[in-house]
Amino acid sequence: MPPKIFVSYSHQDEGWKERVVGHLQILELEDVLEVWEDRRIAAGDDWRPEIEAALDGAAVALLLISRPFLTSRFVRGTEIPRLLERRKAEGVRVIPIFVHPCPWQAVPWLAAIEGRPRNGQALSKLRAAQAEQHLADLALEIRDLLRPEAAPSPPPAPTARVATEGTGRGVPPPWEGEGRIRGEARRGAVRTGQNPDAPIRLDLGRLPTAGPLFVGREPELARLDAAWEDPATHVLTFVAFGGVGKSTLVSRWLGQMAADDWRSARRVLDWSFYSQGTQERVTSADRFLDHALGFFGDPDPTKGSARDRGMRLADLVRAERTLLVLDGVEPLQHPPGPLAGRIKDPGLSALLKSLAGSNPGLCIVTTRERIADLESFQPTAPQVNLRTLSPEAGADLLRQLGVQGKDSELLAASREFGGHALALILLGMSTGRQISPLSLR
Image (cartoon, rainbow, N blue to C red):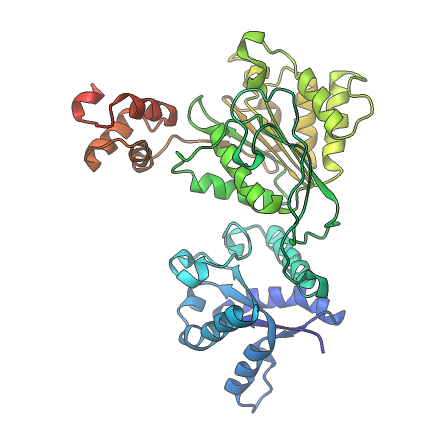
């Protein structure tokens, strides 16, 4: 008999239950699993023993999270306690599925379990095709979990060779140790539908390190998570003045991706155009194109025009699911005027427009000016204006810097400096750990 999947839900979410079960039925027809939900209780049967037996026999439990679900007495009093007990004692897989917005983070047992979608965004807030893709991916994930060889085991240690060339500006991120990783790391026990023995190729270390001083960017981190999970988002650009924290935000998210085994990415490359130095008067992306083409396997990176190389690079990026980060592209954009924001380099422009049109992975860009070349690709290449920190987040940053003062004084300081992250850091380093109204004048 195939493994049983127990679906726990509120009847107010019947429509979402049907969508979840519909994807699982494809696997049920292949005899991979058996779906159990309370609509399968025959008329006249005693429903409570049927549910209890299903709870005791399930290999995987899916919880459709919503406000009605979390306020159901039967769910909270009977189903959840038994499932959590079996999860702890027997290793039963319990997978929350967030179907409607609700304060699920306030429920301790739920906040401790990784759900789907990974970023906690409710399926009902997504476009229909995106929600269906998440459910299809979940069905395949459950299929892989049920395979005998999918039993948990310690992931193999990553292997890498450290590059000896310079790393550009910034200090290498914490997951890289010393130097820049440019090599291969093997995936652990997480299955992605791709060959788990295939190496992940990493070329990282050009972005500034995201240190411990990091506050107020939870929505932006969630936006990055959603963009990686969303097949309809191909390029995501963050736009802000210098010092607001664009590069640090992306660096922090890369750290989270690394901690999560890169979430099915097969190649990861970051590049900072700042690393070439503003004194060099950067006018082309040739250095980046040469390096990236070589990294992705092009036999002759210097062959062809800049536009041809940009198009070749886009094709190579699309060959496998890739995470490409381009930090600080504004040196290659036209200044204010008739061509404001347009990419001056034809190779970089061709790459971005081609990826905006089609990309199974994600390209993340940071810049101080909106990219005019991408304005016609807004559905697949959104450009997000990164705001300065809120007064509360700015005050929290000052506290983390060790600055002492009343809450009202820290909030006033944060407002005085407009929530500008770098300005607040400099303020915190120059106030002698004590802040007062006089120090803001």
